[in-house]
Image (cartoon, rainbow, N blue to C red):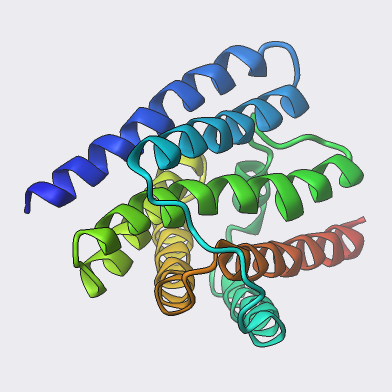
Length: 213
């Protein structure tokens, strides 16, 4: 069990200072906050990965299948949000401090920087460390849990039902991408899944915004 405590401390060592930096930068602009949080995620994760000597692979393993799977699972989860009538509350919750307002900057953040940074933290660092300790399913479950946790904390204005759905969806996505990372050993595979999943969310959000205009 000590390896899970150590993995959690590694996650906190990245998450807490990155969140603090994001809060400071949010006072100067949403785009700065988003880039600051994810940039800190990436930098601190890479430092710890190098110190622990657990570098992930970058082979293009299962990329077409992974990309399609990430998009379809995310699309299904986004469509499932119709179950909740409080869509306006959800839209308010999406206007978070760390997200830029412009579509181009949001695309760059959500399709490139965020997937790379969050997969470096949750998969390459946390899951990679646990895998190096001989944990397989535990590594997948634990990294998925840590990936889902911030989603509950982020959507403060959403209803309990919406928050539970969003967090459960993130946990499911974490389980899938965690398994893909564990069997492939490739951070590129995890990045492709995460980026395509975010793309589905962006497209769904844009279509919803067009209908509401």
